[in-house]
Amino acid sequence: MIKLFLKLAIVALLGNAAFRIGAEYLTYVRFRDAIRDAAMFKVKNETELMARVMELAEQYEVPLDEENVVIERQERRFHVDGWYDKEIEVAPNYFYPWHFGFALDAVKPATYAVTP
Image (cartoon, rainbow, N blue to C red; front, top):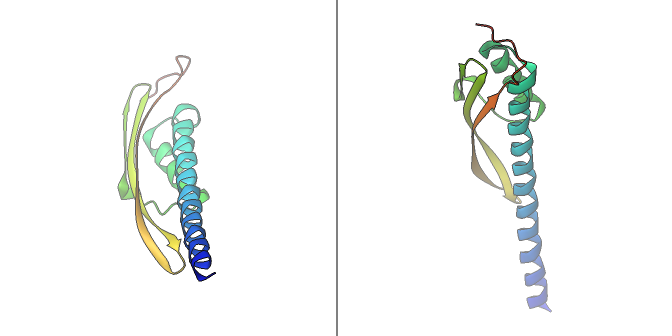
């Protein structure tokens, strides 16, 4: 009986950790896709994109600092590099610092008018 209880407790801890890590990874993927979407369709220059990235970080509850984001632009192409660290509670009262990094390219559609 005790063996069964221990096995169930271990399975519950592993399931909890998988759920929490999976939820944070899903948030990371959605955040990254939102940045790509903003770069392709919603902003016109680097300053607007940086402001939009910071808004998205707040919306997705991502602890992103502005100095951890680098935006480069070449005509219709935006390149965005960035990273953040977030502590994930993988077990009750045990937090693990997880590193999330992103490097993405977004090319505006051909109908986009290039502005300096």
